Image (tube, helix red, strand yellow):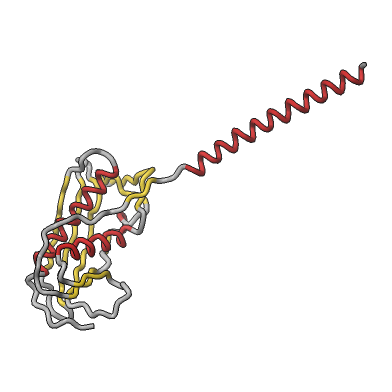
Length: 213
């Protein structure tokens, strides 16, 4: 009888430890799963429709833009104010930001200049460009007022040692539709579209030689 009681108590103790241990493992596993599933939301810039210029064809290379180092981050720069740069804790760019800016500018220009051939720097092609589009970007963020701001030096330069046909420092501002990161990214995309409008308007006035391949 005594032996049965001892065994019974040992069995209950073993069962309790097993159940509690299993519960602890389940809780720990759930917590680890929750941590592993958490991550940033990724955003991309998008091309914006603009005026179409039906002009003579030309071959245009969009150079990879240069971007201020403090803006060249994986996380989206949510605000710059009072000498303080704030990165989003939950939102990131889906690709290298300079690559995205260059790609969107190429798509914007291709839509506005349908008769021209527009491609990115280092794109696999044997085509010799007749004109280059370059940008040096020093602001691409939201400021303390909540406005999206883009400051860029836009350069349009014919092929060869010819002087630039356009070299203009631009500062554009736009109030996002709301306080979300998505609204900020949309505003930044729209301002790139405005820069593409200016570039396209100047590209149609540049005389080019015959196409070369």
